[in-house]
Image (cartoon, rainbow, N blue to C red):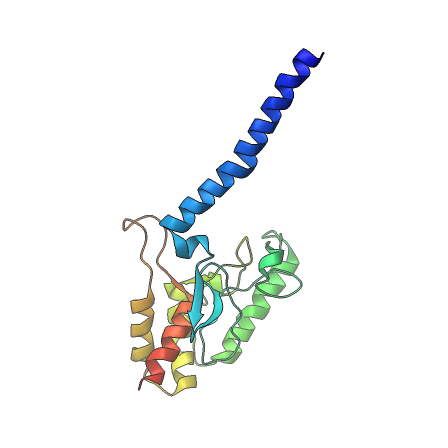
Length: 193
């Protein structure tokens, strides 16, 4: 029996060291060397202070900022520790009520805007943490943000276009804009005036 136990224990220890220690540290080290920003969480700093990540949405509620997608995380919105969607199906009345309430809030914040509300402004993503919105969602909010800041809407729309991330290779994915990056660029551009 010991003749079978010793090779099994040796293989177990060797694979534990290789797969549990050597491989994770090697991959982590390579990731930090090759893509240091992404491996550290794609953090965004402002005035020497970390204020968020390009990968996790943040809740903006004032009219002078662009708003991101609704978050279904609990116990608070955009809680990275509680990632997950609402799991409400399209036939669930709770989803319909939530969407109607979000549409009403958008209409109340910008009563002159009669354009159709982009779907990503009223529905949460599967993770509940989506940091990006479509260009249509950003353009929908441009007049409200411009009015709240007292600037020309053309200036705000131009900023949206400059912050837009185009599809990979021109066709993989949809054009989008990172809400935190857009709001920071908005603050920076208008502060320099």
